[in-house]
Structure formats: C-alpha cells, structure tokens
Length: 465
Length: 68
Image (cartoon, rainbow over all chains, first blue to last red; front, side):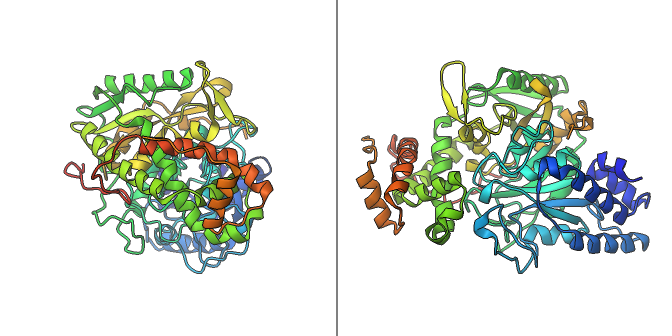
C-alpha cells in the first residue's frame, strides 16, 4: 500500500508523515521490502539495522500522533555509509580488516540525524576504507554490470533505486559526487569543516568531508539543515554559524555570476557528457545567470596535491593494520597503503605548500563569482572490469584518475560542491554536473542547482533494477 | 629542478626497512611499478620553487567576506 511513497522525494514524504497520511512504521516496512527485493542484484548494504530502525519508527509514530514534529527527517528511512559509527553496531568499512570493530557511540552525524527523528535502515557499502571509486561489491541500478561509483557507491545505488530517501556519504576526492553522478542522484559535499566528521573512519584528515546523497537538491538542503554546525570533537570543524539552507532555494539564478572554465573541466571529457553540461549552462543563462569564462589556476597541480596529501595521511591511519593484517586488504587498497608508507615527508609538506598556492589562486579566480560549473565526472558509469579510459588523442588514463580528476579540486580547496543529474547518455546511463561555490556558500550552490532541477525532472525516472 | 631517480628493488627494500614495513621480495616486485608511477606524479610538487610558501594543513576559510 505504501510502496509508491518510496518514489517520492524526502521532502514530499515528510509532508505525508507530518500530515499522518502514512505511518513511519509502514514506511519503514515498505523500504525494507524494497531493499530486500533489490539486494540480490544491487548489494548496496553491508548490513540492515532493522532493530534500531524499528525502535526509531515506533518513536516517530508516537511523537507524530502526539503532534510533535521534529522536522523534515522525522520518521524518514535513510542509510549511512559503513564508515559512520552507530553505537552497538559494527563499522567494517566494507573490509575484512575491520570485521571485529564494534562502535561504542554514535558518530556526530548519526547523533544529529537520530535527534532529528530519522530512521536509519542500514549501513551502505563503500569501496574498502573509502579508498577507491569503484565500490566493487555493488551494482549500478541503471545497469548492474557497471560500477555505482565510489567510494560511497552503496549510498548512491540505494538512493537511486529508491530503497531509502537519503544516504550519507563521505568525500575525500569526490566520493559523494562521483556515485551521485553515475547513479543519477544529487550529492552534496559541504565546505570543509561545515559537517562534523567525529566518529567517521578517516581516509585523509585534511581532505575528508561528510555529506548527503538524495534524489533532489531540496532533500540535500533539508539534510544539511540537520547536519551543519560546529563540533569541537572534530579538529577540522569550522566555528561558522550555520544557515537555513532552504531559505533561498527557490530564488532562481537571475543576477547570479557563474564561472565557466575554459580549461581543465572540459579537457578529456566524453563528448556526450560535455554536451549535456553545456546545455545546463545554456539553460541557466536563459534563466538569468550571467556567464563568465574563467581559467582554472594551477590545474596541473590538483592531482599531485590530492594524492600527495591523501596517501601519507591514509597510510598513517592504517600503519598498524597494514603491518599486521596486510593480507586482509583488497589488492588495490593494499598497494596504495604500502606505497603511502614509503613517501618522503618532504613530498607531503610540498603538497601542503602547493595547496596554499592553489587556495590563493582560486580565491583570486572567484572574485566577482558566485560559483563555477562543470561536469562532475568525465564519463558515464564504466563496466566493472574497465581499468583505463582511452581518449581519442591516445592518452590512456587509469580509471581512478578519470573519476577523481574533476571532483578533487573541491577537496583540495575545501570549497562546497553539489553534483546534480543532467540527463542520460548511451545505454540510458545518467550524467551529472557540479556547481562549486565560495566557502560556506552551500545555500548559493543549492539555489543554482535547484534552478536547473526544477525545469528537468530527471528524478522522476526510475532505474530498472 | 632535478627529478628523482626511478626506484629500483634495492631502494624500495631500504625504504621499507626505514618505514618498518616488512615486505617480502615478491611483494616488493609487485609494488615497484606503482611506486614508480607515484613518484612521477609527486615530482610535479617540486617543479616550482616554493620559496617562503607555508603549508596549508587543512582548508582555511579565511576568504569568507562574501559568505552568502
């Protein structure tokens, strides 16, 4: 009876819950039925958290019946990536290495989501320890033979497949926006420090971000309203006041100054993807945005800085485990971790110094701009066994670099970025564009994203899984 | 700027010893091509003289005059 509600957006179903047209318990049961039906094909979840979810749904039902409404996440089925601690449950990071890890308390995000009344139905698969872009455990709901992206691949897959209404991801080089783009959902990486990472297994302390994947821009904004805020338990947390991220969502783009890169963001990009993103830019211009061409500074330095920071930090986190449990890691992650152990400290410090220069140059580039826009990723979802992309000019690019290349700038600079679906290419596979904003400019990039989204209802198309 | 010499097995073995990372010969051979690629990528960090540039340990949101 309630299964059709799973096709609604988070904000739509929130209205149904608040008006008591649907019970949180019935909605949870519908979500669990959907997930169980899809799991043999998708394998998006490491584990379902049915007991905890049932208690949360019962509590929401009692509160809503008593006229207590905690906000738009109250009674809504959601999921978290298997890096987020949930008290009393394992956090395995989709790895055999962490099979025996049991969380003793909730991560900061789980605390906030639970306090908002959200119903956490399960923990989603990640590329092992968030160190990769393929999430090989999981299928893409548009074609299960293809990758769902990563590292938050399980979150992207289940949100696209309408197993739940929102799922949390993490993003160190694009791990929210990559699965969002290739699964056809919206993914928001907030400004560094905007959302606490306390209680989330780290990949790289200076590049990690936490954020939501959902089916609409408004759903991400509503979730950020719950997540944003200072947390002294996270050393990277920013003591900057949070906003109402829904307040300017419907204001349109008239007068918005949007930078369109002349270089980097459209280099080595699938022509089909480029065409769709150029159409987005034309649409936003028609809607009143002022388009300004910009040159991306220090573009060649993005990948060296991203890897120069991530590899040593990840290896420092894993030092004891890689020395004692190396054989339990997947081969690709083991190679990255062992290599990171052998990098000289001067390389790491050089990456930090180059980041200083990149941030200065990007600040100059952003003068007079609200945001810049480009593809989220250069290609559509690739097959599980495709390890490289061969570009027409003969350049053979490893798949990990292909997918991270356009998303890493927002990690190196710490700037907020949202990926939004913008159509379908070959084999009916989704593509996405990203809007990168000024520090703590989440409300502005969500507004720009929404101005496009409300004209094109890509979220109404359902994957075949 | 001088680019570093591509690593060989002996260099890798010495680096592992310094890092207290026990890898057998077979594993070292598997790791060598990856290390060569990573060093090539990271050599770019040293192409330009960084002079007095300080490190940025994490994102510093100091250019926030225009928050909204």
